[in-house]
Length: 245
Ligand code: NAD
Image 1: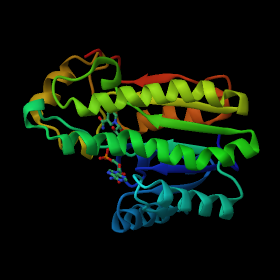
Image 2 (image 1 turned 180 degrees about the horizontal axis):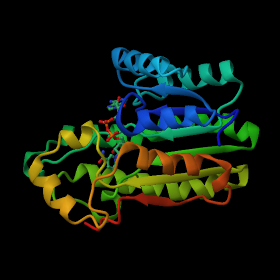
Image 3 (image 1 turned 30 degrees about the vertical axis):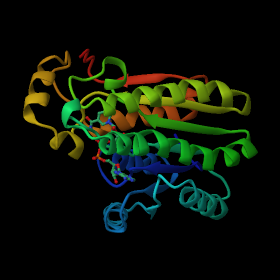
């Protein structure tokens, strides 16, 4: 489904991002994964190599536009184009507001929102040059319903949706589609780090009766990245087992 496409996936070292990288590779794309640290990037690249998939990895500071642009330029030069950008890196929060510092709040916004801006700004000129491109953002179920505590996280994901819907309109004339996937609770380290008191009652409210697996979510990214979604832009696609809380 992605033959001859060149894709960049942030937060590609584990969890949902790692599964997106793997699935994009299985579908014929050339993939570059980005992570936060050299060792985790190397580990992910090595695991995929052992599965017979060759990918490259970098670890720019996503908060720095200059660093991100350097990496985007390098990738574009090496592969000749950038077709797909997946802005997936993200961190979560669960503390109540009394225990949340303004630094905590800024840290979330910095990665979950500002980094998306930086990556996208660095890549858009290459997509415009080809009059073709797909930008996909990882939002969340909390971007629709909020969550009981950890206000910075839903705030950031509401911003992701706004970014997605607005940029889709701005870039449509350049044949660049912009969509987001809003996963529900998904079986990754991010969820393993959340307190049981938050997760257990939530699972009970999921009509499909289970939490999502990274592959469930990656499949939605594959569809949106592919030409199967050629008339889909400005959408937030929920992949949440019909969870409504
Ligand atoms: P994860 O913690 O397993 O992986 C997070 C990824 O982000 C890692 O690859 C990590 O390297 C990267 N990352 C973290 N901090 C970074 C930083 N400072 N700079 C660069 N990269 C950084 O999480 P996940 O569950 O796979 O989450 C991926 C995305 O899915 C996030 O945007 C998250 O908000 C979203 N999401 C997750 C769930 C869930 O239940 N797991 C639900 C909804 C949305």
